[in-house]
Image 1 (tube, one colour):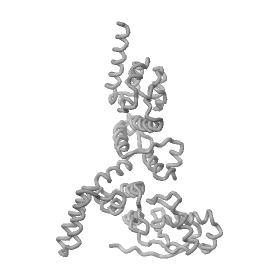
Image 2 (cartoon, helix red, strand yellow):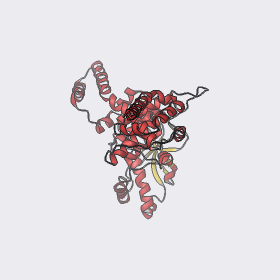
Image 3 (tube, helix red, strand yellow):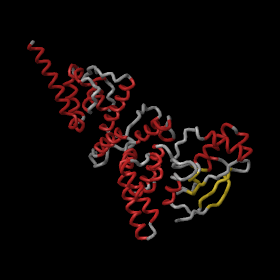
Length: 379
């Protein structure tokens, strides 16, 4: 096992250390008692930093302590000056390479372990960005995963039995065999957890923003800049699975030069339709699951909505939600909308890719409307 070498030094201000990736979910609550402890007893355990690829000091271990120091500086500046008049002491890891950074940051065995699914998501994001494979990630993050999602049932019993055998084994070849058996069983049991978090990582950026808002109660950093004015629903992993499927379909659409037209930063129309469907369901839940009764709009207005990808009108939203499988939409109201045929024609003309996915549903509604009109004429 590699031994990390450290050297102690002082920095003049907190901003001399960049935070970088932080797998801690800190809402400010943890900072207060820790800050009070530091004011009383001083900084007992020094934050550990390393030189990143840009040559800057980056936080490795000690995010909670650094946040607490920030709280002291803001709320008790005299105490901060008393404690750190000569600078803020840190420990600099002198031999950390890129492979070490992941384990250095994701320190789930330190004084306060990671305990929230969003912290696991942040750790997964780091691992996936570094190119680590599924099994390696599951093995590395197993203590964290077990803490958040205790392994129960048959899988839990199997793992416990293998671990007991491993603890008693003395022969090296037997231990190696049991270790592989243990890793394989843990991998099999934890694939679902891994895939849930992997889908969040692969999805458009707004999905991660929604997850952060649900976990922290607010957005931070780039998410705050980009999505600060967005209405963000509380997403389930089933929602994310559905959203990612549509995002992947959008990514298959290419321009004339073979370039991709959409990205994680700017997702495509199928993703946006599904996103609006999820938002609609969230609003329905807030309003007591009242069915949507959309109003008719003109063909020109519908064309503009498709062009702008806004779908703000009652009819457009209702149609798109219904065709995406939303059972909360009143189909009878859609059938009675007097411009429904125009809507179908315009969608087929302006968004042929989307039309291929919902055309049959549109056609069934138009056919039902025509039947109702014929029956009325006969009467």
